[in-house]
Image 1 (tube, helix red, strand yellow):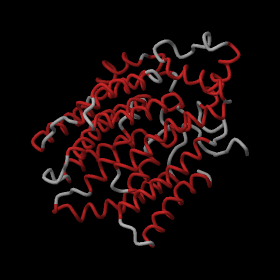
Image 2 (spheres, helix red, strand yellow; image 1 turned 45 degrees about the horizontal axis):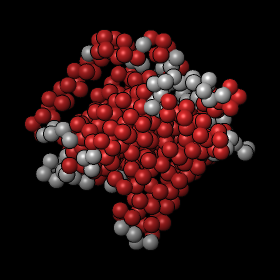
Image 3 (cartoon, helix red, strand yellow; image 1 turned 90 degrees about the vertical axis):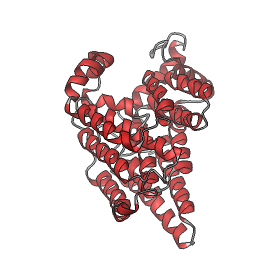
Length: 356
């Protein structure tokens, strides 16, 4: 990674240190660091050159073709996903491809930034996890689904407030940009599922069984659902996006959250985030067979560090020393891995701005 990504890491670290030196409390330090982190990241996403992100140029070509062919004819993404087509048509009336990338970047990243600003209880953990979570590089490339992910994050607040109709509307809007967003329908019942301590062994057993029989499950359920032609279009990701390592990491997080959390201290939001983490770990098992499955998980991955940060603040007294070690080791490991070992299957390096 080049200097731009070093700056995305260094800026929030400096902000956190500055807030610490000013004797600000931890919530203030966390919010300041998260705000700086996402401001620098949004800048990188919105100002990127067309060469940054493997699919960026394809979306720009689609945007350019609309005024030439007429938006009523350039219906490439089909009637099942009209949201992106309509957004392109509207933006073309007021600006060029740069405005298109800026607006799509803001729609994708801002909801995640606001989610972390409001819900995170550990800026080092959440920001460092975001670097290695797939979302960091994906939002440079997956313009259409990136917007769907951002809208999906907005739907979370309707889940939290128990507003079913606005939730369904928001999921429908996200699905109009990318059909995979239909998986967000599970977010509402999952968040309020009563997975008590007595059910934790059963949940972990299900996840373990899915891991053991992942080939059978993939071939009989997921492969027919995706379709062979669709999967073949993403073969370039196979073996280059660290999916196996992430699957193992998410499984460890699932086990960690179940063992460490003191249920007497856990509130409804903590348990809801923990439930989403368990689902994300389950889904990601199958990405080792084909990384395109992670497209289903982009909608749930943002909640993983939120769950971990809340679990760490509500651990059993017996495990407090482990939590203190984990709170230091995990951010250091994530940043080190991102800078020196992470792959680049979506071609976000070298980073160039559009004016360079």
